[in-house]
Image (cartoon, one colour):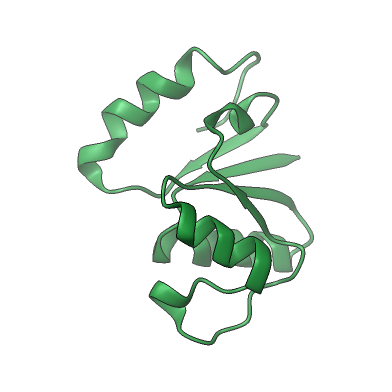
Length: 99
């Protein structure tokens, strides 16, 4: 099953790390390019976790189209962002998806 975690902050990164450590196919979506680059290039999210090493298999993107084909979309964004992000991904989902 393919999971997309929406949110590259502390909560999203932690949940994605747990999923990746349990050998799930997971991708993190974030709007903060610095966080996404830090995850991809340094295997860290320095803003929230300092020098904690993330699973090197964990990948992130700033491309919201990544939700296409996902089996699960896990929302890990601030409450104020839930409605806008749900509207944004609604048009991109091309099959039944667990949210």
